[in-house]
Length: 377
Ligand SMILES: CC(C)(COP(=O)(O)OP(=O)(O)OC[C@H]1O[C@@H](n2cnc3c(N)ncnc32)[C@H](O)[C@@H]1OP(=O)(O)O)[C@@H](O)C(=O)NCCC(=O)NCCS
Image 1: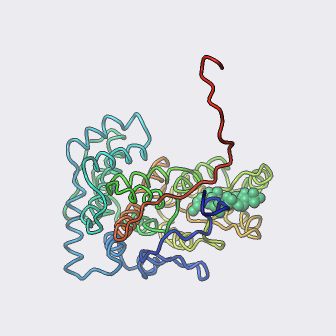
Image 2 (image 1 turned 120 degrees about the vertical axis):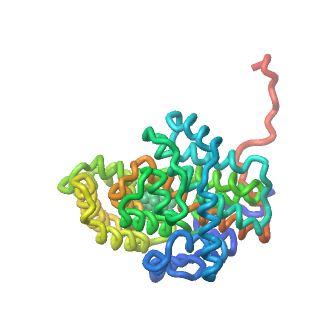
Image 3 (image 1 turned 45 degrees about the vertical axis):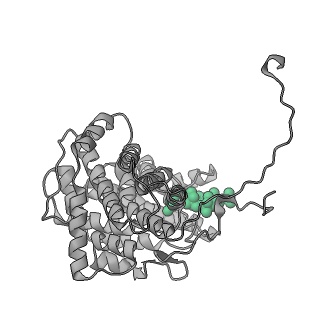
């Protein structure tokens, strides 16, 4: 008999573990990685240091920082088998499926369960980034470009996509996006990673479980869905009428609502600030996207805020992705690259005191039923 007689649908409001990795302040609207305010990290740090903070829950010394960034750079290198796998599958599937396949292959033969496996955590995040970049590069007809020792993480990602060093401002925007998406408690994807890790599956496969849970439009896929929504709306003058009709059809407005924030998503505020710094790079399509988003933000709040539903990060990030030239079907995969830092950190932390995750279900069917042989049916 189950020990509980009621079901908490969607595990809403359920604490599933203790963690020192991040804290969401839903009163003040702030997000902290191991105690460090994400706003500070975006302004003063970079993605490399953010990964260190998440994995170690402290700042690195200067020596540790240099060692850490050099390990990350080393792990960005891909092997011929990676490139062959990407070439074989790139036109046959979507980016996230290919990313998860590459991670599963990377985990082949490895064991899980060791909380000291930080090196694998570093390798996994770097591999996610180089897989992503190589997929975009090869998909657009280019050959694999190896990372360069003189470039930072975000610069290398863009270099591996484009085959040339582009605008430094674009690399800064990418770096900011990587920091902002790196960690957010226990959403569906992190939980999926932990469920896999709790069986002592290897770290790479556990990250693949996270990637697959991130895919859907209610979670990581929301930025792509919010971009598609803006394209459907078409121009800012149509926003109010579109919104009224969508709400009357009980459609969910992408880029609005959150299980945890019942206020304006603080990450969306950071993204809006970054946008003001790159307005001069927006082409006419991105400018229209921006105007549609501004209108949707305002009218959407008029209708939805009274119900505690506010704009979230995914309403605004498509503007940044498009400004730096990333294809719309790669937004969720980039989110996965960034969030792999959070997944790896949670997996290693969980292994410090591992317990198989195995909840219960409340059986509502009949039993016992008499089995009737096939020939008598
Ligand atoms: C994120 C999300 C899944 C969280 O929702 P949740 O806590 O599970 O709450 P529910 O989906 O059960 O929604 C509760 C109510 O609010 C409404 N609601 C929630 N988000 C809404 C949205 N974006 N647009 C319109 N209505 C919304 C639901 O329709 C539901 O209304 P009802 O009680 O009349 O049926 C939800 O807000 C959503 O689907 N948002 C759109 C996708 C998105 O932007 N995701 C990114 C999150 S960062």
